[in-house]
Length: 244
Image (cartoon, one colour):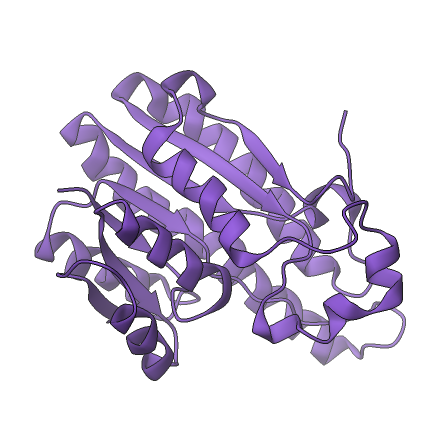
C-alpha cells in the first residue's frame, strides 16, 4: 500500500489530488490549516479507506514537525505533495509598509519555508528507506512575475530552486523531487476571476486548467514518472506562458 501526505487538501487542487490518488489505490493523509469540515468533505468522496486528516499551521516550524511525526506514526509515508499556498495581493505602490511586510512574511512562510521544512522531515526518513518522492506545486508566476502579488511569485520561484536543489541532494538516496507549475486553475476560490475577458484572452485553449488536470500531472509525478525526471518542472498552463 502506498501512503501519501498531501498539504492543503481541503479544497481546490488539493482535493482533486487526493481524489485522483485514491482512485489509484493510495492511502492519503489529508492536511488542512483551518477548515476541517472541507477536509472531511473531501475524505468522504474519496475511494478506498484508511484516509486520515491532520491539522497543522504551515507557517509554524513546530507545527510542521508535529504534522510529519503524526503522519509518519500512522503509516510509512512514501511521498509528500506540498500543495498548500496563499496568494495575498500587496501591490508595491498602494500597500502600506505594515501590509507589505506582513504579506511577505506570511507568504514566504507558507509557500516556501513551510514546504522546505516538511520536505526536510520527509527527506531524511525517505533516505533511510531508500525510496520516496516529493512533489511541489509551484506556479507559472515563478517565471512571469506577479505585479499585484510579488511575494507569491518570489515564493514560487524559490520553491522551484528548492526542489531542484533537493533533487540533486536526494537523488543518490533514491528520493526523487518534481515540480508542477500551473497557471490559472478553475477552483472555487477564483471562479469569477477565471471568466474575466482579460484572463481568457491570455488562454490559447479558451479556458484555464481544471483542478483535475493539475491533479493528473501531480499523480503522474508521484506514482509514475521515471527516476530520470527528478528535478523536472512541468508546466500546466495551456500554453498561456511558454518557457525556453
